[in-house]
Length: 197
Image (cartoon, rainbow, N blue to C red; front, side, top):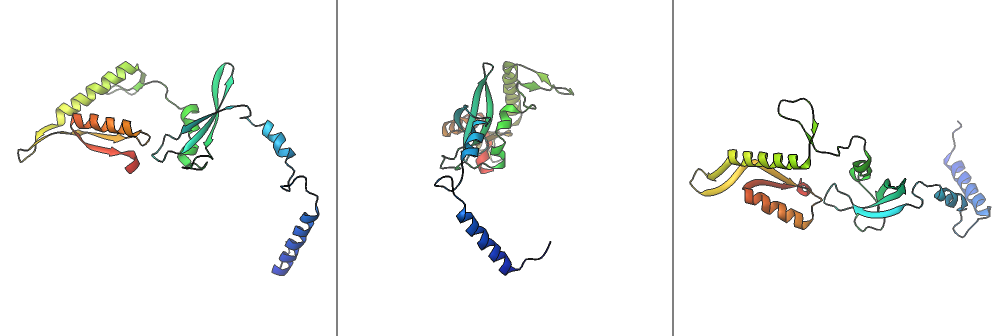
């Protein structure tokens, strides 16, 4: 490829600009939008219902638009993207938020509670009632085994150091308040919030 000098490059640029100015323009914007309009009709989300939501990953609260369409009598998620009208994210999403669609459509998504018994090498599907009962039993056992009524100086502390709690960044203020009160009532002192981590 032959070398082009700076002067030749500027001449070619000026000639190209002059040539573009002589080409008749199809609309006031200067571009023919017919191919783009035709392509818009072929989009996968054409005719889809827009549902506004929030990204579940952190405390920023980026807005999302989910596109759904009825296919064979069942609502199907077609696309999730950032909401350009949001003052928070103005349509942009971080890498985690950009993968939000995988929360609903991933083939690896676990849709039912899974339990692996102590010493077992396989997971079993269980009911929600079983899982909530098991969770309550484990919390009670941990609290009973690690409860401290008094510290070394004889001060009443009534705390458990065997349980820690990390709040979700997608919590509302009310959910965060409720979770903190619940954990404090159990004597949990190791309380953290995902938004601070």
